[in-house]
Length: 101
Image (cartoon, rainbow, N blue to C red; front, side):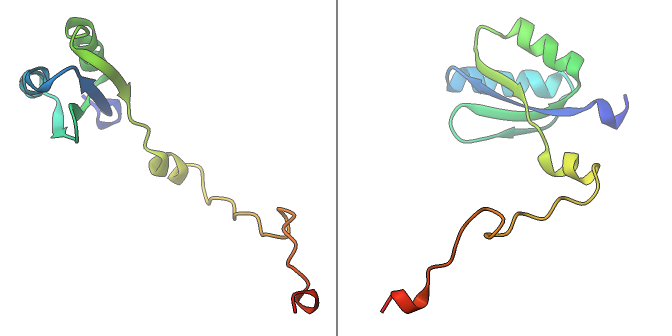
């Protein structure tokens, strides 16, 4: 399976028992880098097919299930990022120091 097909997914489960069971299921299913996050959340790298299967079979214990977007990797593929606007371009005017005293 090509590395490009693997994506990171994050999920929130209904309780600790469900989280522990899901961690075991993901590992047995071949998901990579299964990581426990704070609360009842897990993060794992898997293919879209594996993700669809997990979501369909274990949907009753999943409160949230979504892919994680890697903004840095996306930006690297688009070339140099635009410079942020200056304060003057945003319309911010410096106060007149002679009127402050």
